[in-house]
Length: 242
Image 1 (cartoon, rainbow, N blue to C red):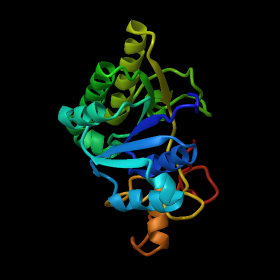
Image 2: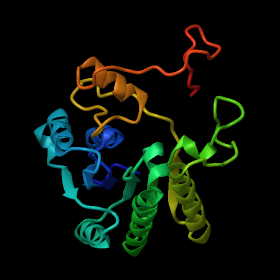
Image 3: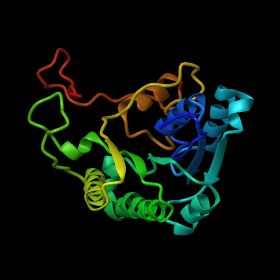
């Protein structure tokens, strides 16, 4: 993507952990950015802090839209008012345990929302997407580290939604080769902006280890429970391989 004409990127889930950091980078690289987020697991304060980090001038290039990808009207409103050069798609539910307990919620959010997004992108001839997939599409690989060409074998409803959406992306590209879609597979991202003003701050009890540790450290949660005492490690607790 060249820089001669100001380009506009739609970031779904842009108020979330990875979304806010991506939006900061995009604004600092002189892109215009529109966020759509239903604030299911994020807060509007994070967007305010993005504006604070980039300053008043670049903040004018950022637009926040409260909306839900499952509602076609919300997406249509966005695309009818603004031409987008690309979409970075972070919006989706991501807790493995919750997906096992309530798979329909995950199919509705992750699958229906993304299909609606593709339909509207196609209608408005925006055919460039970065899709936030997950390393869970590999299931439990026999060896680590995990690499790109490992077998695809999701083992829970959350992972299956990501795997289905990867397959949908491949099918769309096979049928319409002008689409350019990148699939990002990662594990649990960790970290925060160097300013400390934005970072991972999930609602409720965190599902991932690092935000749980951080909330214990600042007193929001009382303690960290370490499970296991007979694993072949120095202290008997489990080791999770990346």
